Amino acid sequence: MVDAGPVTPGQVSFLLGIIPVFITWIYAEYLEYKKSSSVPKAHSDSNLVELGEETIKEDDRAVLLEGGLSRSASVKFNSSSIKVNLMRFLTMDDSFVLEHRLTLRVMSELGAILFYFYICDRTDILGDSTKNYNRDLFIFLCLLLVIVSAMTSLKKHSDKSAFSGKSILYLNRHQTEEWKGWMQVLFLLYHYFAASEIYNAIRIFIAAYVWMTGFGNFSYYYIRKDFSLARFAQMMWRLNFFVAFCCIVLNNDYMLYYICPMHTLFTLMVYGALGIFSKYNEIRSVMAVKILACFLVVILVWEIPGVFDIVWRPLAFLLGYTDPAKPDLPRLHEWHFRSGLDRYIWIFGMIYAYYHPTVEKWMEKLEESDTKRRVSIKAGIVSIALLVGYLWYECIYKLDKVSYNKLHPYTSWIPITVYICLRNFTQQLRNFSLTLFAWLGKITLETYISQFHIWLRSNTPNGQPKWLLSVIPNYPMLNFMLTTAIYVLVRESYLTIKLFQANIAY
Image 1: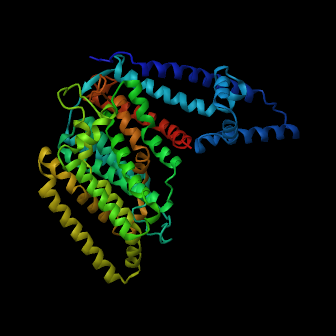
Image 2 (image 1 turned 30 degrees about the vertical axis):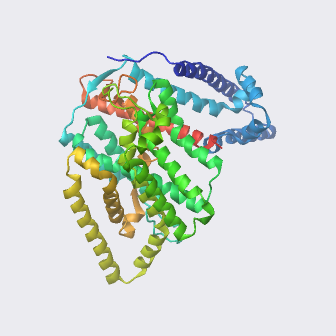
Image 3 (image 1 turned 180 degrees about the vertical axis):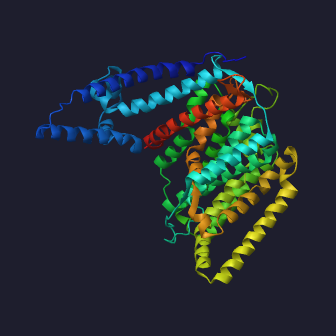
């Protein structure tokens, strides 16, 4: 039974805002159609000039998808007041509507996606079904996707390193996106089939995402030295734009999508660590002090009893969460649990990013050394990595859920390091990636959020997605195929929306 909850002011505001946007976009498309159909078909020189000018204007509008606003739009937007532009929008001024047609289209797509979320998860229009785990089917689907990906999307890259100028490609972008992609697939299948037996592996995958937050943000700020307010605002916008609208439309708490506040927190921590006294970041001793300070802050907040509540209680309105199935737990319990599991791994990401150029130079020398020396060193590294991985698996991974969670914050860096070693120990492995997984790894945050509402179902505000969305009742595999196809189709719309919202913060 669906419990949509009472209509909230946020939902009413969103509806009142998106309806005129949608109507104006339809009008803009009509004007564009009318304008294009009225172009003369004669091939005179004057008409060719007009067509050329029209093409330039259309190309100018297409810049929206790369830069947030068109060139002409951005100039006019900066030179005219918000009030004037708002009036032009409300009166549906033809030139204004045409000029911002692509912006209106992206906003309408966002509104349509959120409306679809609401239909799937807060109404009885579509049904739900129970989750059912079958190990054989689960493994079959995972292996099938790997085989298809290997057969259709294996690609060799020849990018040059930003540090050495050579094709070392240690922890390159293609590789990390592939990494995010295959972890995302397992993460989603874990939720869809309730594959509780791989719970500990999922904890490692989430830790790897947080590790990448530390690694990626450190690399950017350390190399670019861009601590501007614009860059900071853009990062916060990217991380929270979509989830904010989901919370408004579906009346959910921010912490239901715990990945978002976690990434936001650890991005802020990296920004603060490098931004404070940033002009001294090149000094090794200063960087060592900063990293040590990060460890001390984490120890103070998460390890000393009582400090966590003192620090985060003022933000309970934002980070508090009450699961309808567990109403007796403290509001900050979920935030304490989720953030605490990965409280250290972002710092390891920073450390690995700091030593990335050093490791890459060492790998460059290793690749240039004689064959016997190169093979022996690589064999030693692989042997040690496999031994450490085996010991971690036997002593830690095989523990029950509760026991494992106690050790996870202190040991999650081990399997991540083992994976990095095995994934990068030869030039051939570094050069190749599975682009299907890399494609899946490009917008993991939005994909993670949407699974709650158009692949799974919670049926109530703040509810965990304990059911499956059922479009074809009594046919679980056909339903899985159809809902997954729609899920991937909606995911494609995120690419356009992400390009728009990633740049409009500027």
